[in-house]
Image (cartoon, rainbow, N blue to C red; front, side):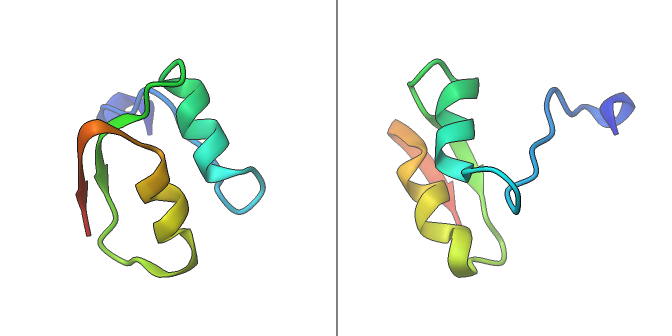
Length: 57
């Protein structure tokens, strides 16, 4: 996977998605969140978006 450009992988089914994203960004949140499916993780992904970040759903 990493040879295709991924810097980090996370298993959102076994760890808190928002906490992990905030940890990876030093508490700033993600600049861009791509969530083409939505569902139960959409709110956590949205809440992990940085100020003035973009949520693409």
